[in-house]
Length: 450
Ligand code: TRP
Image (cartoon, rainbow, N blue to C red; front, side):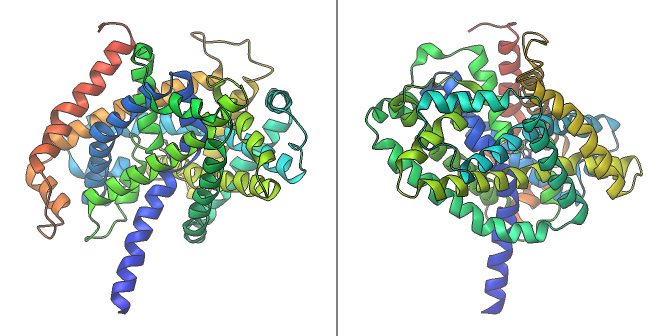
């Protein structure tokens, strides 16, 4: 009896940790706004195809490398190959982590501000337009968003230093299901709103005339971002997996949980966008502008709004610690700096760039590079270039460089579980994933046209 329970809880723990990294602002904040900017339904289809054909195989590849090497991303490639070339995956990963955590902190700060607004009952009595004003006034400010960002980064750093992740994991197992319940409640309210059907059509009825190179790049970048892929985070987690962790089913479970939460967020948001006549392409403010309108309508809205923003902040935290960890592992293991020092150094440097991201929404909004503000630029470079490139190299490594029998051993737990189709997996990591990523790039920079 006892051993059965132990093994169940540890398997759930494995999935919970990987899912805790994957499920975050990417699902609830980023997915709806990026789908909204790219025409809704057609973005959803391309994104789902990318998750299935590229995301899951790349996640399995990170798991294979991590569990085989028992090391983080830098040590792993040193362990598995003599060539120094593959270090580039780690180097790009550190850059991506730095960039992503910079703007992640901005949005996590917004979440904390909205938590305070929820507690002080600041949404009630305001119409959709006034709530929009509320968001733009504070997000364009010079002080408040910066202060909340600093608080969020300090909490992230404290957790990475103190290693109280065990505790966090314990709570997230309770808190994340609660978040799903709240989103479901929002879903039911949203779909029954007058005019809400229009929003569901927007999300589920593809309009193929909206296909564009930008859509493909955004969908690929978001598939990597939302699954925490391409920079070795899941590789590091897999180094703690047990011998009997099934790598295939774990990947599929994490990807499914992640996708379901994104869809549930979309089902809450788009009907509300249409019912309250706000703008589906409103950009990064979308969730913050739309959801308070629903909270005003539902019974218990005051309590639910507090819980929602609190849990969103917690979801952001379980992701942000996994991002900071990449930079800390690099500094402490490659540069021989103590963990505490490395964490303080990394978190401080990221907070400085992060503050620039925050200010680029308001005071620095005129400062553009290639037409993007700093916030957008760091997001695009990390999500749309560094992560897919990392993912491409990771799949090439498993497909072409690792010995096939090692891949089979890892996927089958040394013959203990059946592999659904090794041929399909090898085809995906050798050909389909790398070639598809390559073509999305060429397409995106306008070298090829379809
Ligand atoms: N996946 C997380 C989200 O959706 C963000 C994240 C955490 C991430 N770790 C990552 C993104 C590693 C890329 C790489 O919010």
